[in-house]
Image (cartoon, rainbow, N blue to C red):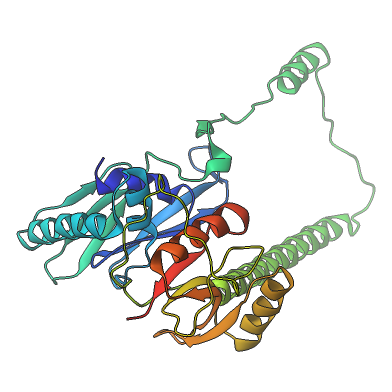
Length: 329
């Protein structure tokens, strides 16, 4: 299968999938809504976007493809790099890249990368089987029919009222109309003010949500070193005596491979994560900040790439599917 097929599969499970040296496809959940003009109901879905500045290899796509095709990591990395070079040549020549069920990428006249998402696929697994539908507004004709029949049977006759002397009732009528107009105006103004206030609240909640997502976001800004291919059919590497009993993590003096648990905007959040992982038995540690200024936390670190990949698979199966491998040359 090509890179596009694996990219489709990963977008169902992850919110960020990076194609090394090309860009990242991001997804964001969008709630269900009703189109008032067409009376169409739309289910919740994931909106897909593209960021050409996120090009650093985080290991997710290449590791997934290598495991699926039972091949080495470096071999698959070279295959992905060849595909990316072909894509770049097509973009520079003015062609559009079409990613199946995802969208199209092209370069405009200002030499900027553009992306048009596809509306055919919903990557939100909880909305599987849901589709949009139109619900026509309900019209009530029963009451109108009864009123027409009643008027036909009992006609209403209005007779002029005789007054012996002029009074102030006409003025009272005008005063009532004026009060009614003022009441309607005040009600409309209050409704307008309430709508503006609700809109501001919604904007603030959206900004808070974006801030929380940024605090919990995980980025990887280093390319992996040359790692040996991991053959799942061979026997696993036996850890040294001082390794952890619960996770089989190898301990040596010099460590160049880190299994990343997360990157945080504030350092106190990183410290909380370290304490949480240590309670679970991991040798968690703080390994500094990346180019984005985020504080990175690692489950553990290794000198052997093969052992690191084995432990990474174990952590993904038992702890978190969002764990990544960071290698330092």
